Length: 400
Image 1 (spheres, rainbow, N blue to C red):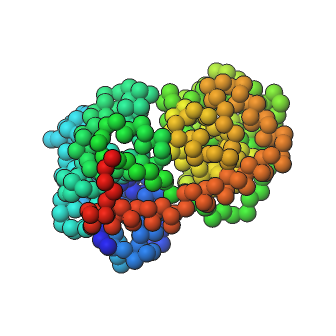
Image 2 (cartoon, helix red, strand yellow):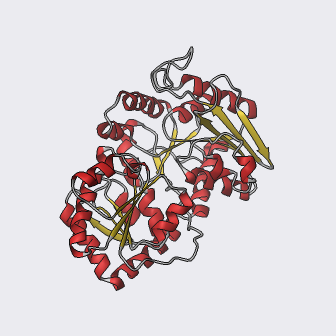
Image 3 (cartoon, one colour):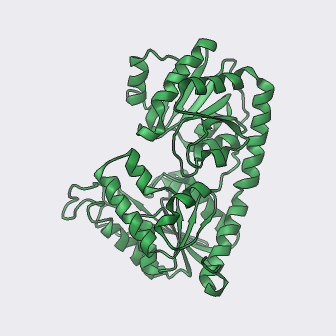
């Protein structure tokens, strides 16, 4: 089958077997979702022909798309404008015209290579271009644009909500990455939304050696309201009263030195926080695996890749009992608490740090749950069944 995947794709995630020196000369793509590359690589492993389409804001607007072909893979990186609203040369910002230029690039690529099936991820520019090529394109919903606007009330997010509502109004075939996400956006479309979870890889780790002192890991990008980082940091300050030598290892843009988390810790005299910032994905997983637990205090998640990846590493998590899809993802792989209550967070962390048999039991359940529920082969099989329905509309379920 000839399948097009249109999504944020990082060159380093997809072309893993390419000489790093050669790969560095290629456009970087978009390092937002390693799971997309895992899906593409599995489709290739199964013998399918894959057209992988992404964009890169570092390519010149007038530059032709970058094309790399190897075996059954065609990887195309189209230029994307850097500025959101301000002019990019003769053109407006990418969001100001709803990614019109980027959508034209993606549509032209689809028309050039003529895939049998198109699968777009996220309900924005990739989905709109995919639907222009094939009204029956499969769209995977990774977030709820209305909720994002609630927590990040910017003009950009308002425009993105407009794009998402258009996609739901015109789209015919959708999946969502969790029951929570499917239910939250189902009122926007008459099409039945099927749940296909994100694939979560079981990491290939170096030997795991945990330090003698307690280590709590967090991985957070951004300081948005729904990330709830202030509560997490205040909870860590409370944890230090019982565990003075505990260390908080902070990964992601929220933990860049000198940024908001650093300022907050200085203001509130919170010590023993490691501001590790953006870290290569494999290094972050290794760091998670060497921690005693992963703390995830977000109050809303469409899936929850951070707790899922922690569980895959065999590490228990403390996360929100009402945080969107998080309870469904975590299940018995962690302790679920009210993450708006710093004392409740601290109590759960203390429980795992002081009760090793409990922590070890939860860690085993966590790893087994991820291997069973979010297995790449199983997820790919679910998508393949939907791709077959693209080719054979008579096999599609009848809408209720």
